[in-house]
Image (cartoon, rainbow, N blue to C red; front, side, top):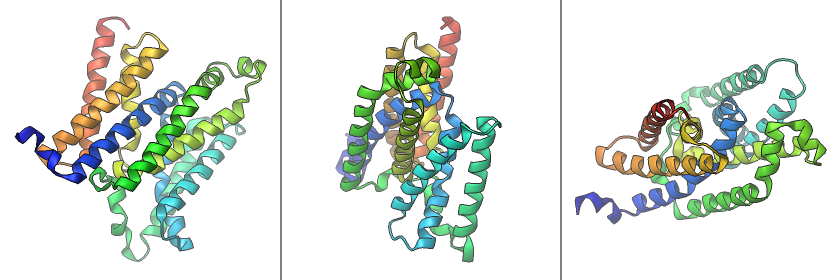
Length: 270
């Protein structure tokens, strides 16, 4: 049957499995990113991938994924520390870091006209994922699941009221840093297949769509994961049959879901 012709290709099977792992990750983490108003933060993390690659090139690291992850973790922790200590707004601090990071990465990678070698990371390629990389993603999903099980309530308390959280012996700084590191890991591990230009959209749109129609935290998480998985699976199948890039197709579908839920929420006063 033509609709299931993609099943004969191993790269499509691996890509669909990757979507089934990545989208729940984005759904869960996206809810807290939106709740904590960190959309700009995750966007800056995505852009810092260029600098991570550049640092790896300068240091002679063969596997640039390692340099990306290490740089992103340091970048996220520095952002957290400086944002909590300077008088300027958080958005301003993130913008300064993001702009400097992007410029530095582009300057290094474009030296000698070699940037074309790295341009593929801007849009990503989910169809290039390998079985070994699927196991890496599954490991990250397991780590996030454990964090959500034992740390979500603490992080939520910190987000709502830091003073109340401290009164219950919750270390606000430690929880915020842990969440920043997890976000950095997910962004960097996924960016090779999703792309720098659109990865933040996949983190934010499902959670924002869920917020439009959810009446409690349980619904918020459920719909975020559901919308993320639905747009991911449908996006990869549509892109296969229409022959367009997968990442942008997923984002377009996620955007449509957002506008539909926005209309539904307004209509029903949610």
